Image (cartoon, rainbow, N blue to C red; front, side, top):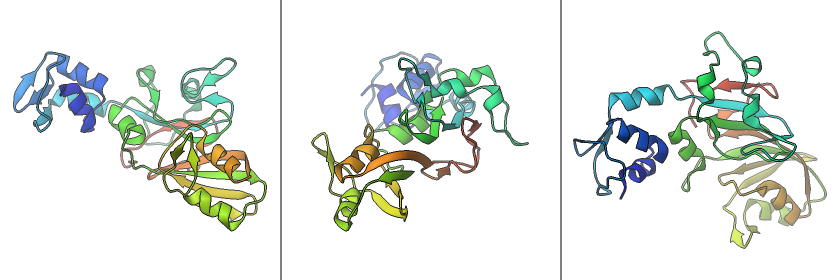
Length: 239
């Protein structure tokens, strides 16, 4: 197996980052320094990173953004802006112990997951391939919590189906946790992220989602981060 793929699968870094580390001589496989891209190794090989790679990873930043409605998570769409355009010095939510924004924080910054254009709430953007893989990798187990305002009627059977039993695009959905918070708002907890999943789930049981806000990803909460502002993931936080 290619060493870069093996490193990504183990959560050491992204494949792109692995290639960079290999080119710089920062990767050791079974004690041997590897410098040639495309080098292969046994899947059971011992892989260690040089201190240079570890230092580079410490400099990679992860940003938490309270995305407003009208911004797309990733690539721009006609008439709409990507959420990353909000990552500006004047939009930073600062406390006394947080680092200040620098232009280098935008290099390689990419969304780790989606949030629909007509939804708001917590969006993660990161330079760190390990965090991206943790949140959107094929085997991710990180759950996400949403508050959803709905219109329509929902009986006990419909609520049960929201929790488990629905399919989208001929694929069964994983079990979810869905409960009423008040007469027009549901709480969803999911550990998958199919396109427009919650809105489509609601439609299947006769509801219309009229407002959707993501308030938590794993152990990280949106908290009191103001709409349209962002902050860095703190050293004491993890997903």
